[in-house]
Length: 465
Ligand SMILES: Nc1ncnc2c1ncn2[C@@H]1O[C@H](COP(=O)(O)OP(=O)(O)OP(=O)(O)O)[C@@H](O)[C@H]1O
Ligand SMILES: O=P(O)(O)OC[C@H]1O[C@](O)(CO)[C@@H](O)[C@@H]1O
Image (cartoon, rainbow, N blue to C red; front, side, top):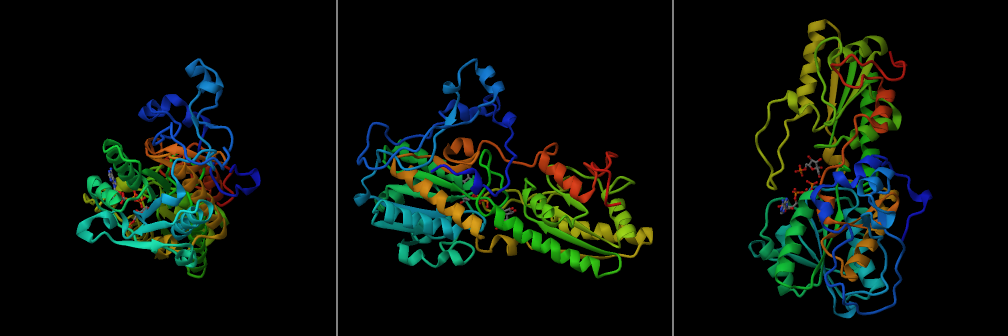
């Protein structure tokens, strides 16, 4: 189950060796980085093979020195794959699947992949899907389940979204586990973001406290690509490709209009990966704004003058802004969504107005075209790369669950599919490194300064002037 170098067409050099130093891992390293087992002493059948060596979380010289130890003693992630011994007897296993949080391309592919692997690889006879996220387990919403077979899921990946539905908002983990017990489920697959995984950890805790034998395995979902350690989240490649189409369209619009400015808002609450990757596709953008790099609007080195200069010299300009950018400049909304995530102030319309005001005051003609394609982007079906990627993640998740792993997620780290304890997967957030190669590439393609408001100049001799 290891990936060959050739099949990694995705981005993800954001994991730097230093990030992986065990000293920075926090409380998660207190637990074993090897994924938790329901019961290490019990296996049932013996017809699958182990798949190789663990992937070291920290194989840097600094890490080895920090621990004063050998490579063998360093924390490592267990490789995904079929096991010599499996924990559950497939003929008696019942599995459940749930999708939570926001949409992401590839959700239906993951569901279909799980169902097929459970059915065809292992001969599991009953798989159910819970409708509308964690609500589907709760009696107030009527224990909303749907029977899943390879037949019923066969056509679902052609559609975006999740045919099971999804939701936000708190549900009682005790009640969720009551439901799992009543339905005699042995394995639960949760597909969602960091909130979903925190919920799954609660479910696994209640299962442990009740002494039940139910495995909880996560397939991390995030269009923002903000799950730490993993190379890239499924759906991300599809998302930034779609986003790049929006940028292209707005570039066409801007070019066709005297003083035209195309402004595109993209998703990315705390991490600007979609904005960065989408902007790099055709290098159309003149400015990219992400949550990780604060910016200033005013003054000679501010964003607005940068745009005015671009419009004066090139006739048009294009701005890409991630939804979490510039929040320090806007009035906070002071509200949260049903799951407790802070609602962000809407940077798009605010920026449009500020640009228009600035150009009017300066007496420079402009016409700002603004688009927020966020929901259009995240609701499309997975592209071929993400589609195949989700199949491989589904395989990995089923092998993990059937071998009794629990409270862990599957992911690809340094091109290897591995088990990651949930506590580690939610321990921090993957973000664009403002001093890293990705941001540098964005600066080179836009010719913008490292940070608007600082006189740091363009990094490459400013070919865009
Ligand atoms: N700290 C938590 N403890 C227990 N459950 C949680 C926690 N945070 C979120 N959840 C539950 O997980 C589900 C999904 O959470 P949330 O809406 O935050 O989406 P998410 O999984 O983070 O995905 P997205 O990245 O789209 O926001 C919700 O039902 C929510 O109540
Ligand atoms: O409008 P919704 O469904 O709450 O989701 C919005 C959020 O979901 C995300 O796409 C994460 O899944 C964020 O980027 C965005 O802020």
